[in-house]
Image 1 (cartoon, rainbow, N blue to C red):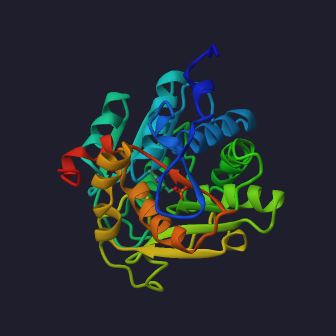
Image 2: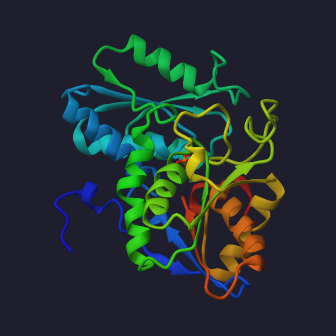
Length: 304
Ligand SMILES: Cc1ncc(COP(=O)(O)O)c(C=O)c1O
């Protein structure tokens, strides 16, 4: 298939069988094969094009967002293609690779402390809001508070999974950060078949998992760190918290036993699915999201 530009190459990622010990059939949706390297290409493109359509984003404008890395990378890539300036705030724990990738796409990157609370004035979210206020003709997709983040996944990722599994999917697993992926896909799948189980993966130390008493954790791209208006709990059956050790411990075996060089959030998902799948039966079909690649974290030493 010929693409008129890189943006139309976003989506339609492969769904690949993963051989975990289980009577069920399990597939991974390789979102790291999107052009910007993550699931966030979908939400960034949707929110930017929506703002273009409704006139919030004008030619010559500046895109500003807070990101654990990937939303920023997608925004920076899209900004480069469409000719917008881009400013991204990220927390200090984001990998060097993500930081360097943002710079390569030409974004201005502001590193912010990894605060426990999102509404801390120093947090990457608060700093993005302040930059947006002070930058004329700027648009902030605001992935943490913009419901269109979930609508993006409702309109592309959900239908793809339904079609690729020919409606056979019984369980859906995805990491929750903003909650956009799990909520958008979850809503779409439940509308097709309300019996499908939708399972979100969180960090054991997140704001959500600790009832508002978060602790620092190593995971990136997974962890519900605020009361998210994007997270639609009505379409989620379970939220399973994962430790740093469990999520990071599976990364190397996933690469050297399965050939899947996956990133940190995918490690959290893989760990949960591996355990959960022991309880599934032979007619079950599980789909897990692998949101980005291990190449974004190689210098962190998790794969040594
Ligand atoms: C690699 C990766 N996986 C999963 C997520 C979580 O997705 P969502 O924000 O849609 O909940 C993110 C978010 O940044 C991510 O970068």
